[in-house]
Image 1 (spheres, helix red, strand yellow):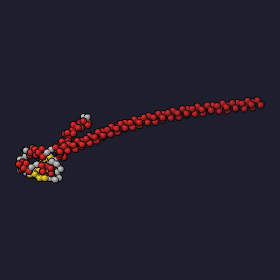
Image 2: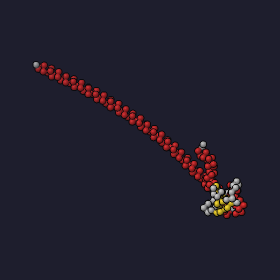
Image 3: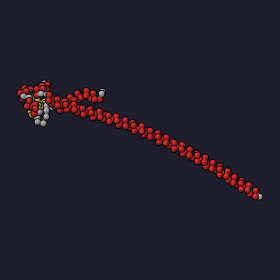
Image 4: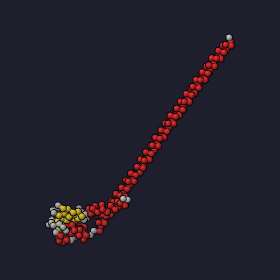
Length: 191
């Protein structure tokens, strides 16, 4: 009987150990499967993060390029405007300093040459009023008066003020700049 109890104990022990070994094997396999799944999921998540980071980096690069292009356009426009302003200022100074009273007399004659009106009036800047002889105006049938608010040039009105011509330096500059700065704009913008 002793032998059978020992056999029985050995058998129970063997079955328990075998069963424990099987359970251990199942637990290890399950742990390995879970670990592989975790690693696979983590790798997929890492790939997604990397892909999103690449998309975001490309987006930032594109935004940077667009910002640089906009800044370059703004600089070109600003430069163009500054040069046009400078050009207009130089042109205005040249008109002011180079047109003589006799040039203005010729301009006045040309402006009224086709006007058949007894009421012609010229408002002149101080410089022109003192530089053009009153006899020139009377021979042209123009009433001339000094207008201290005019810094340069003159304004001519006919038909009781119905027609008005502005020959101030500022107005002459404003009339000429669009035509003269077109070439400058082509140079700046390379059109």
